Length: 177
Image (cartoon, rainbow, N blue to C red):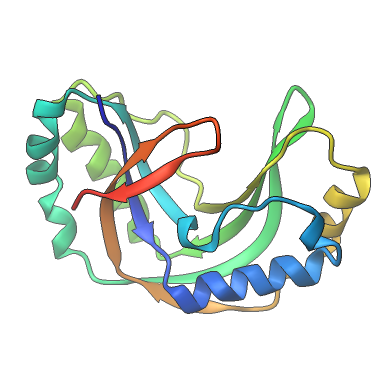
């Protein structure tokens, strides 16, 4: 069964700028394993595993994404998601046009007919930069918490249905539509 999500693609120049900011925030960046630049995206809706025969129907149901224009985006700050009081994910925050919330809400509504649960948490626009192992030094967290992200604006206008194949070496993404 394919494991799916819907993502807003981040333009290459914006992804490269994020990497440059990451490297500036963490002088010893070369000591760590990071999410590859090509995997940086904004998840609009995580779908999860679905039966193969539903993929085409889901693709049709989200065709309305083609009606949306590009979104104005601005990088905001680095931050962390915590698990058991330990940093688990380093992310870059995004300020995005308010109509992204309407898009996410519509995705939730449309996908409910496939028994895909709506997300109860408020949508939080962020880009995953690194999944942490839990053995990073305090300096690692401090570097990103102290760093002031300069104003970087860009437009993102391509939403895609993606498949995520999990493996011991990490996930591999494949664009479906």
